[in-house]
Image (cartoon, rainbow, N blue to C red; front, side, top):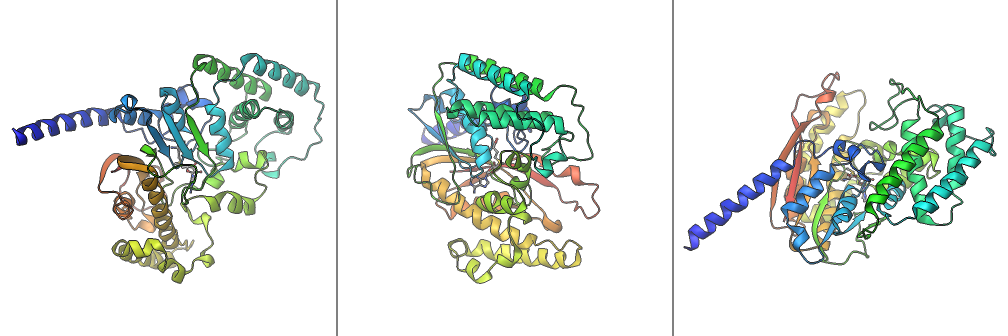
Length: 440
Ligand SMILES: C[S@@+](CC[C@H](N)C(=O)[O-])C[C@H]1O[C@@H](n2cnc3c(N)ncnc32)[C@H](O)[C@@H]1O
């Protein structure tokens, strides 16, 4: 009876798993679904994953039936995991190291605002914008001057300055989010796909105020549907490579996340229009020091090659605990370096790769620390091939996770990726994929 009982159960589990994996369709790594879903669509963040991924995992893990489960997202982004969990009434905690994104997330999680107060403030603001008290004599950021007309910038700056004076933080963040989203819709060129596309021109048929008001009123109508729902999610402005004292040891039941991919986005650049507009940054120096340094190293713009110290690196905990993996990384690094010397750009992808895995080792340790024993972590990840040298990122991170205390890992391919760069002169022909890494 023992064996057949085990096999029957295993088959049932595999079928259940398969059914739910189908639910996790090939676009789960993309933000497309979010653009049509209330609250998820309050901010256009192209680097997000689908809320359907979070919903699917919650269903798969049968979490709603557990007593007060807590879900952890170390890379909260625009808050997809946190918002989805809150919609389900499930507790969630997250880290996000970009200040601008933190405000986006918090605005998306404050659902018990007074509609009357919001409308009253909107009318005051409208009166102020149309009386044009602040005039056109403002100093606009030079980058913004290339992306918006002067009249549009005058409206945007006037709104920004006025809402800064609101006393209540939740009200201020709500307005700020509507304004952040407006920045995407009234620019001359698309500003985040994921970077500025100067070869494309947007139509801009509406006045910036009308765009802002439409977005704002749309957000209010979503709020009405959510009224009464409790706040269950919380986000910290924290670098996930370090221990977050506010999230206790073995306190979480599940991790759902998507880390930066190796050699992919420079998040400091992705958000620069917004960070300049909201005066978090002013130039590239600020982007590096105030934004990039707090992020997992994901692109060559995140570090200065001269700062890489081989001796320090080789004596790090990552290297000591992952000797065999580091040997393989070193072989890949020297291959990449050799090719880079023949290329005009001479980019140090070798160093980028070494930093990336060290950073991710620190994050995986933090994920393991906060997860209860036997709990799973679901990570969406992309492979990479800097200078055509294939780096099996997902598998390597699975192996590194075993050295952080996880007992097993599994990889499910979601889709192939990177095909849109095919026409580039030096583009490699290696097939890259986006994967789901499941750690237990
Ligand atoms: C792929 S995005 C996550 C997207 C998210 N799943 C969503 O749907 O919005 C990665 C996010 O991690 C953040 N990040 C990168 N390094 C970090 C770190 N060390 N600690 C905390 N957040 C970090 C980036 O700012 C970015 O917002």
